[in-house]
Image (cartoon, rainbow, N blue to C red; front, side, top):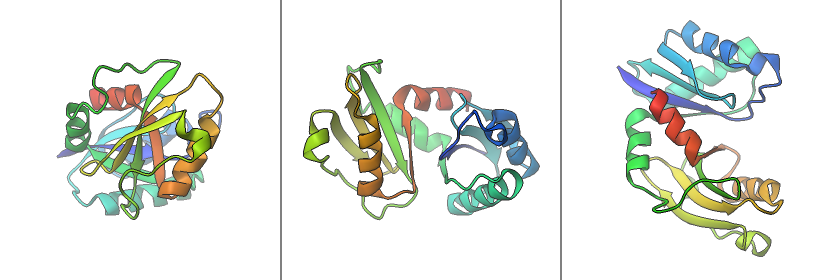
Length: 179
């Protein structure tokens, strides 16, 4: 049995169909074990004997859309992938804070991997640390002391496509702990 995290895109806890209990219900209904949610932002952990992550992503996304009308994306990472990412210590000596966000943007596919350069208007706000190949994640540090977050997210989608989802480094740690 492999433990996985489903990182769901576009989850808004204010939408009744996107609340943890309904999301967990879809996963349990698919026969997954040990289903749990982490925070209210679309992070579901579960166990499965299935090892084809692309098939899992497709199966989960189809069920979320059919049962709850959630059209967003589903990105799966195994516990081993997330543990290796955390163990690689991509932010040595740094601490996630209100002013400085440490972030991991997970890519579904690797069409455009590598370090992209933020445009000049974001260069002072965002530092791309690296692209982590095994976890297919772009790791970045963002200065959150000025209102540039929406522009950063729009740039990420332009640079890497819409099949991505971003989590803070604290959230990645919480997901791993729940697994």
